[in-house]
Every structure is written in structure tokens, then in C-alpha cells.
Length: 402
Ligand code: HEC
Ligand SMILES: [Cu+2]
Image 1 (spheres, rainbow, N blue to C red):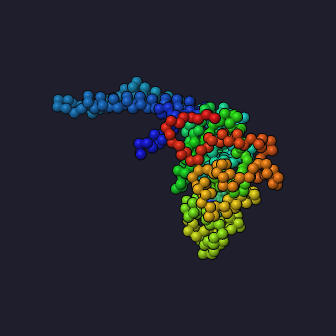
Image 2 (image 1 turned 180 degrees about the horizontal axis):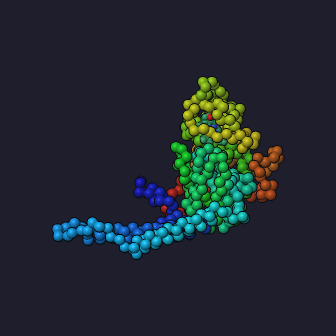
Image 3 (image 1 turned 30 degrees about the vertical axis):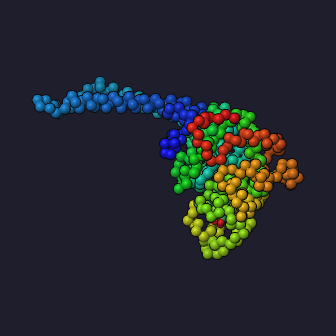
């Protein structure tokens, strides 16, 4: 078992011997530079160790051999072994600075994507308002990420891009990249951010599409399901709720399970009782600390979603939590992975686009009226590239193109 897991631990499939795929313009330069430094270090390591062993043998204490305790001095030798390494180190520094400046200076023609890091999930917001928990970008375009943290220090790291940037609370940090290879890559948080830090590893959390695939994905992602329950699930999986709340009844992740509680009376940390109803959900999402549930006083705090959710989005979350009550079929569909369109349809949580036209105003955040509204069914194939939790670990996979 260990043996079969092992290759997956070594960064990625479709790697070169040392490195993950070279998916950005930084990669070639970074890898080459890494190898130069490696070979320089190996050369000097070998030189020094061989000289050391040679001298240890040559000048060893032995009968009849009289050493000399006076130090020898050789100007030419000393200058050589000072000047050459100094020049090499200066070259490494200068080249490093050159590469660094490139990485912190985004070009002017970028596609800007907002990134929010929170314990313990990522959320990406796209130019058309779409929100997702995975990063989707077109190939051969400059991408700029504007990154914020809602709680602690995180670090955005995609090994295949060879670039990494801290995400700092109270500040916007930027990250830019030009992807050059289509495929799905892993995303890491590279800064220890609490006990579920490893949850921020997203296998295949970065998808590089061709232009058409990106546009199809984007159009589809900007349209949340019309049905309130499916919409609520959609928000739950995209806003990071998923990383702290399970839907299996009674299962504790960071916060309490969200299933099975609707309508129940619960105890708060101050010993009062509250009914888990529409108002309580609303309050819990907007002001989470106001009535902490008993037993969760010391849990990692839930961030407030005040100002981040529209009324109909809150209603959708409420509808979803209501639907979870005594509903094993829905819980089953949701619990590991995605509530797919088909599953939602089968369970009756789907409202067709056409009927929704009459319902007042779409629930899509910042939906561009222009984004062709009636193509979702054939665009569905483009979303296959966001599989539920990298469950497929087959060694045969290579960078998949869309
Ligand atoms: C960082 C982890 C975290 C995230 C992210 C998070 N929550 Fe919470 N949530 C908690 C914790 C911890 C509690 C329990 C303490 C409290 O009531 O404040 C809680 C409580 C709640 C409660 C009250 C549940 C009860 O049984 O008392 C609701 C409802 C809720 N969260 C909904 C959400 C929704 C919806 C989202 C996403 C929009 C979300 N949470 C995101 C950690 C989180
Ligand atoms: Cu993190």
C-alpha cells in the first residue's frame, strides 16, 4: 500500500526526473538555474572532500615522519580560492535578483483574478464574477492574482509554475504567471497555517485550458444553479464552508456538521438555548462569534461573511441546510465530492434555465448579460477538469488537455 502511494508523493506524475511539469515561462529558467547551483555545489563538494582525504593520508602521523607546525602561506593560492568563489557567488546573486524582479513585475496586459485564502481553503473570483475553489486560466496569457487572506498567513504555491507568493492578512499581494502548458496541476499552501494546513493542498487545483475551454468554463461557472438548494450547495462548496463544516450528521471538522440540525434547539457556549432556524443561520454566517455553539468555543474562528453574500445567496444557503435535514440521499450525494447537475436533477433540486427567466432577477453574482446563457449543457465537458477531490491517482495520467 505504501509502495503504491509513494510515487504520488513525489510531486507529480508526468514529471521530469527532478521536476514537476514546466507549465509556466518561469520554469525553464528556474530549473536551469537550480541545476547550475547544484552542479557548482557538487563540484566544490567533490574538490574539497577529495583534497581533504588526500591531505589526511599524505600528511598522516607515522613513524619517521616529522610534520612542520609552521603555517604555510601561498599568496597566489589564497587569492585564487577567494576570488573565484566570490565571483561565482556574485553571479548567483545577480542572476537571482534578475529572476526575482521578473517574478514580481507583472506585465501590463494581465487577466486579473482575485484570490482569497482562508483556513483552510482557496477561493478564486474571476473577471465575470464567477467564483470557484479552483484556479482556471487560459494558456499563453498573462495572469495576475490579487491575493488576500481572511485570517492568517498563507502562501500560494504552484510547483508546476515555479512561483510562490505569501498571502498576508491585511494586505493584497500579487502574483503573476504566464502558463504555457495545458493541464491540471497541484496547488499548495506553503506556509503552515494551522492544524488543517494540509487541507489547502488541492490536487489538480489549477487548470490551464486553451482559450475556448477557458471561456466555456468561465461562462458556466458564472451561473450558479437556479434551484435554491443546488445554489446553496454551490455556495457551500465555493465559499470555503466545506473546509470547516461536514454534511454528515454529527461529524465535526472544525465547526459542527450542518446536517440534521435544522429546527433543533441547540445550546450556546453561554448556556443559553437557540433554535437552529433561518435567523440563526443568518446570524451565524454574518456574525459567527455572536452565539458560539457549546463545545466550539475553542475551535478556530469562523470568518464573517458580512457584506460578501447577497440576500438571495443567504436564502440559498438556508434552503440547502433545510434540505439536508433527514435527507440521506442529498447527504450522500454531497458528502464526498460534488453534487453534479445530474444528481441534483435526480433529487429534484434543479430548476431549468427557462423557468428561471421569469423568476425576478438572476441569482448569479455580477452575471454579464452577455455571457451566452443557453450553452451550459455542452459546456459541461469543460468542467470535467475539476474532478471532486483528486480521487483518481492512476499513474497513467498525464497532463490532460481540454
Ligand atoms: C474557519 C472555519 C469555518 C468556515 C470557513 C465556516 N465556518 Fe461556520 N462555523 C465554524 C465554527 C468553528 C462554528 C461554531 C462556532 C460558532 O458558532 O461560531 C461555526 C458555526 C456555524 C453555524 C452555526 C452551526 C451550529 O450548529 O451552531 C452555521 C450555520 C455556519 N457555521 C455556517 C457556515 C457557512 C454557511 C459557511 C460558509 C459560507 C461557514 N460556516 C464557514 C467554522 C467555520
Ligand atoms: Cu494556508
